[in-house]
Length: 275
Image: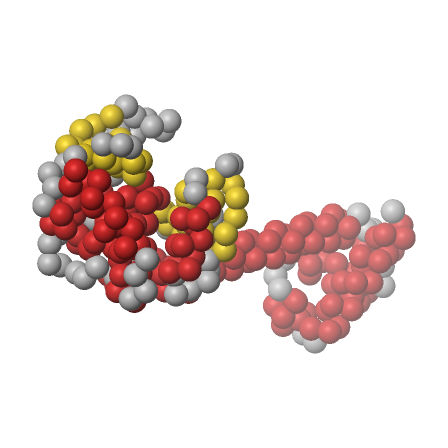
């Protein structure tokens, strides 16, 4: 997104600069300082100031943030910067579709983030700022509904739906990002489904193994000499083939599956009564 802010690559660059300055800039009596942890965004700001107002900005690294990431400061000052403030205010208030999309691009570069699809946090795109009016403006410019919330002293405009994330990315002109995001989302869903199936199969296999072991212990406790011949034959068949299925036992014993199941149940019941 930041790389696309080069001159002539897209419309609404003045509104984009307005969104970026509103999101990450601090004005004083001499000009404005924009701070960001992205070198690409910092360079984008320098290009936008030069292309839109013919102003040269100073770009320098500042002290790292609380996560240890390098931060950059873009300083633009002088009469030209002060006069540009009014024009940025006018661009901010534009009602054109292109300018609103451009403003969102700038706001996202300055204060936005999006999670990778398929992660633990699910689908999530947000723009965070200390100013409530800014957050409300972002929500108003978005063509998809954004929720507003107060979190740790800051205002958050966000969406937690896959359609909301991709629609907002598309509005900002990030069509390649939309395709990549959707591809990752599909891959994440496939992996999640595979994990669910694997977990389900593992759970079923565990329950089956537990039940088989419990049945085996029950049958081993019986005295074959005290059983009717039919049950004695079934007991011996099961003990000789502990891993065989009902169908396999039925075939080996010349019985139906229901008869095998019935006799095994009787054997387990006898074991429980004798225990």
